[in-house]
Length: 264
Figure 1 (tube, rainbow, N blue to C red):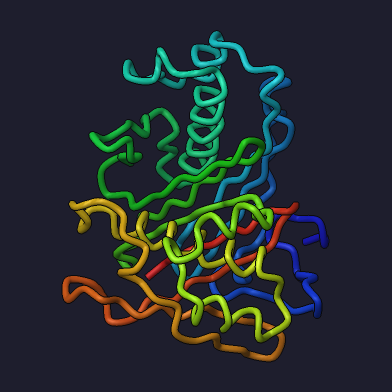
Figure 2 (figure 1 turned 30 degrees about the horizontal axis):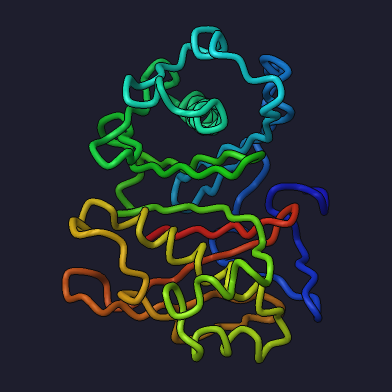
């Protein structure tokens, strides 16, 4: 895979190192179909064979969004989103397009099935599949698996925060100790804060079925950074008895975004 690919090899902070784990094991599965329209700028499919995990990625251009694209791509727009701003609708469309790419790659060719929306606006994947979606204003991703080797999957992508952004969430999302674990390795505060925020978002998505009383970022605490050569995993301790004792999160930097993934 080339250096500018979705799962790029190197991350440049004040020093160069690789943040990985599951993410580094994905291999490129080339999509042979053409881009469907100008709204979708590019698409890519990756596959992680150990967990039978499919990762679909697309970049989109909101300038070319049109409501007719839902029919063109055979994607249903939920009633509750019909009055939403076009920006939100375009992000939803891109996310469901990424889901169709991932479902189409499966042996059963499940691309005709819809990823519907739940009561808390969470994605509901077809029966016997575990999946997760994420998007920014230009990138959408879907990770899905039929494998019984995994009980949960969560993915998140976030633009790297500005100084104003990370100051605004200090104490709400991360503690001083959590931030210092990353900044002590030469990572800027903005990137460190984004890594923690995105990792916790991925954790909440992965365990959404067990969480019924809102998001509390302090339920999960970054406790350790595990280096293997030039690679790093983030270990989070869980403060609730109904979850695993510890959760490992993989992360990457891609096109001024942080991408995180939980698969366990």
